[in-house]
Length: 70
Image 1 (tube, rainbow, N blue to C red):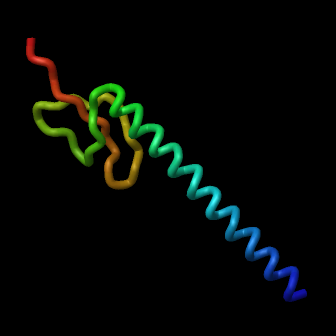
Image 2: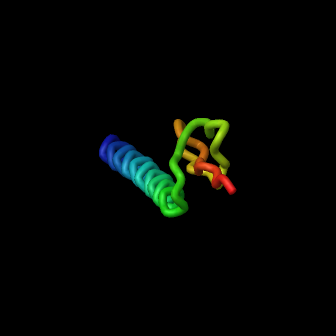
């Protein structure tokens, strides 16, 4: 029975690690999309910047871009 328990815990740990890897991949993808829009990921946008999307990372939730002056 202890062998089955060890296998169960190893499989559980592997699934948890895979879940973290795939969620990190999504954050990297959103950060790249923000950079393609000439933005940057920040906690809060500055007063002269517009919010153009979300980076959805824990520490950098917003994608900010400088406003264009007409």
